[in-house]
Image (tube, rainbow, N blue to C red; front, side, top):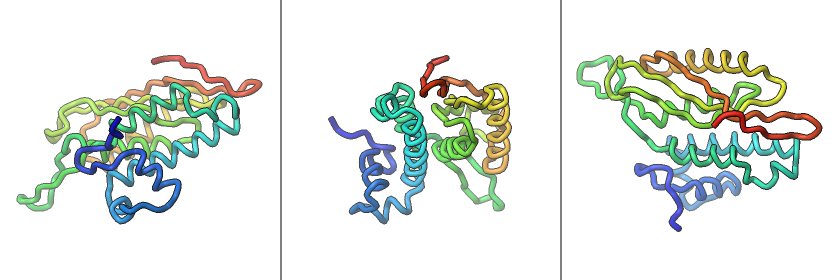
Length: 199
């Protein structure tokens, strides 16, 4: 089977990036250091490594195998989300300016900001709406894994507020809603258990 690339514009695979992350060397190291797509994937893989380490500390037997369904879900969505996607127009200072940012860059922002919030890690991220038309309404859908000890309603509200602020600061999207769905709950009760509470 041919390894799946992270996007047509780049052509690097998750396996290549994972090897680079864990060994620090690659024949393609200069590209990996300077490619925004590769850097977004590397940041997500670092967070995934940190998350896996936390879960191993909670329960080596369950988390150490690396084949948890929710973990595979994150990897599957990561392959999709690191593609460049649609071009989102940006206003320029000059009429001849042709500026844009990619859908993949915005999703990477959502994932990075969301993963800094204690008690949660980001799963699937999707932007719904006409991204190619300036000012068109856009809805953000984010799936989240929540951790024991963090009340879910408060966590969702904080995440929604944090993401809304980051998107307003770093993009020109007309965000009309940020929908949060808690898809997994990791609970520490006499050893970590993982309960799928919503697909």
